[in-house]
Length: 439
Image 1 (spheres, rainbow, N blue to C red):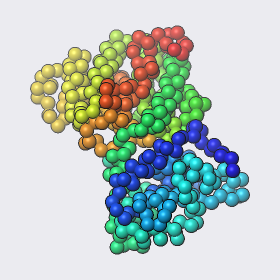
Image 2 (image 1 turned 135 degrees about the vertical axis):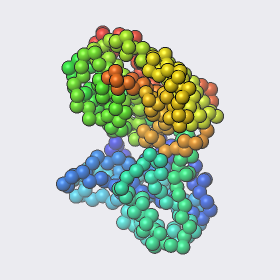
Image 3 (image 1 turned 120 degrees about the vertical axis):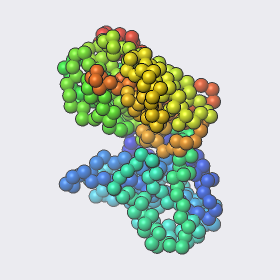
Image 4 (image 1 turned 90 degrees about the vertical axis):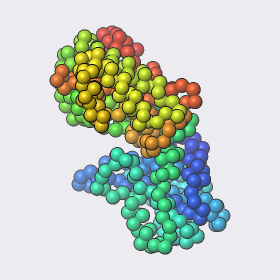
């Protein structure tokens, strides 16, 4: 059957997923089986669902990008040919008519590189046999240390059922392995992240041309999503922040419903998601095209910190120590801006340094399939990691905040900025906005 492309993004080389599976299986204990589930369709209201977004772990290991898919890994399985198998839902004429095309077995195999594809209705029997051949079961869960939710996902529900049915097996967590793997991006992943960054660049350029006093924050958001969708992105990688004036001091502001006023700044934090990989950009621009003297001074201070912080994203550094060093840089800038004094620094609480009054968040986090990507934040920085770099200064008493952010690939040489060609210098931003044309 001819392959039917059913995603917005271009087909991904299955070598990416094959390598990821091999790396995961190499880290598994002997005689063990690992099971990964797709995300649920999340109820919205009535009979409606939120748009489906695949579980990042399942996608990382298989590339399968539709609901009701299951991946099973069993390295060195005594049953020949069962080291890796996948289950997908069997389609029919009714589903095809109401929901559209779903994977055939051949398509699922081509996308994932997995030879054995079964229908989901066969999983109970096939999986039971494999589990009885194993002594250990790797189960998956969301171990992002920022995650807090009352919602029980498919992986966790299935784990509870497994433990009831197979109580004498030994159970292991998949996430410690996934964290180690996901932190280091392959060349395929870097290409996908670069594509997401490129789409984000086009959206930002569009915003520079569009923004002027009187536009609504949600109109700016509309320009961004227009560019994302027309460029083949899934959409936003996270809820976009379009914060003008005093809103720019709210770190996670996303109501995006205020009018952009003459003389204010517009702080934007958004990123395109392409092939489930997300960019993460922050820029702050003057609504009327010209920074005031004070806005410019704060902007330049943030940019100086950002440039120096990027230089520190090199192998061997520890991210927690890096954050402390960036804090010291920010401390000097805040003193120069007369926001804090040397006396404030001398009497500061070491647990809450004086600079945190105006720069209260971390500078960097891992980036990949998730905007706050799966990672061990205490592991040394290594080549292949991708970090954001996003210093900011927020001054509620002056009615504005400035944040700048780029996405940085760590290499064995020097940091590589995936967003190096997105305007960031104040002069360039003002020039583009005053010209009213894209650069």
